[in-house]
Amino acid sequence: MATSKRRRNSLTRLIEDVVDDAKDLVDDVVDRAKDVERDGRKAVRRAVRDNGDGDRRSDDSPREREMDDLKSALDDLTAKVNRLAALQAEGRKPNP
Image (tube, rainbow, N blue to C red; front, side):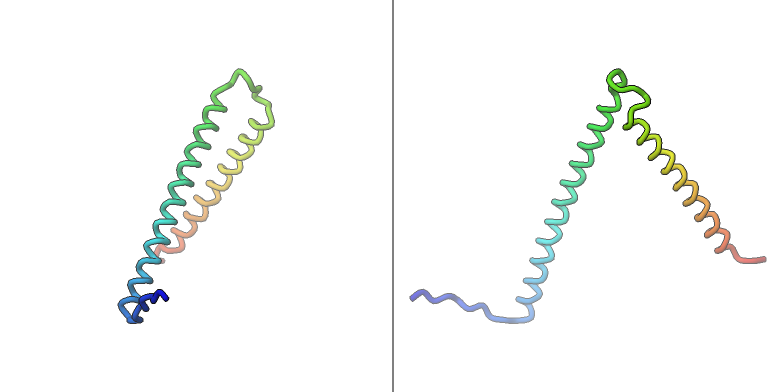
């Protein structure tokens, strides 16, 4: 019968296990972030490459209209954020 070594429980072993698990978690998160970054770059490259083919699509294509709508919405949101930041900055100023 094979006897397995029993691991002694101690505070240092517990800390070691926690640190090892934390390292594994960080490694997994970094790997996932690399994958997301790579996929994001690939998607941007594809979008830029597809938008560079002006001969194949007309300016009134649904994709172009959607892009224009998104740009407009982004401009509106940017203006709102800037206005809120200005109001917040005014609220922080001490009254004379």
